Length: 392
Image (cartoon, rainbow, N blue to C red):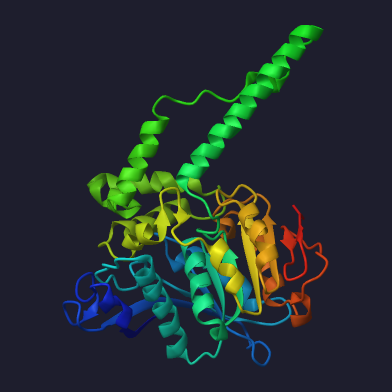
């Protein structure tokens, strides 16, 4: 179903009109934005004060990606949960208002008002937020702005955690290659001196293609020009569906999702009129590093608890979250799921659902900092007095 509410923040961004948004034209009036909402309800409500669960998808995605998770989470283990998954503006069934945010702050205003509008329209006092990737970043921002409205904060492979940049990453990789080359030279010398066979490390770092610096320069240029993945798909015209379908077949594991259906769903989101996609280069720098990294901001969190979930082959590095734990003032844990990448809730839905239910049904006493505890299917750790524990 869809719900509608005023989005004043869009006015400040030059909103109004276009892309299916309702309301006045120009930038002087509010936009009545409709967002798509999916709901999975358990057989009964949780305990008194049990907060409903709101799931927010990542960039260029939609709420349907949570399909393998909603029913299991709603059923719960020890108690049922009310679970909602919304489509962000510009995605899925939501409106696509003209999106002209000039700054990171404007973009964050829009997302926070979207989440707050949804919460207020349902009359919920507090919610538990589950945000993936870009949705994780925005869930954290909402929790920072409205801590009184958030029970637990669960960040699923969130973007924007490390305090770094593409340039720093390239510099670090160059340093790593230099060290690998030195280690290889030393290994070759030792092998020649002893007459033994060359060890694997003697091969040194792999040869980097000549076009690598050009590719990085092109990425930076396109990023700052505002070219988005959605825009590339639209430029492909009739080739777009096959390209997106090929990506879906390559990206998702066999047996986890209907790859053809996933490709068609993603194409419909990516190829539609541009809207929320333009938030990307206001919030992130090339390489998906945040303009305002969460590592600097999360210490101000004042929610019941925060949990980070990652896949063990995730392109988002769980070590960045682990580095943040000691600075947090609230109980926090990092969980790493086996056999899963960035879409861990699809790659390993069973372990994701189990881990999420562990978090949702953890008693308040279990949120207190202290010794790290072992648990199935991931990595856990506790902040606010605790540490990080590997349970791969």
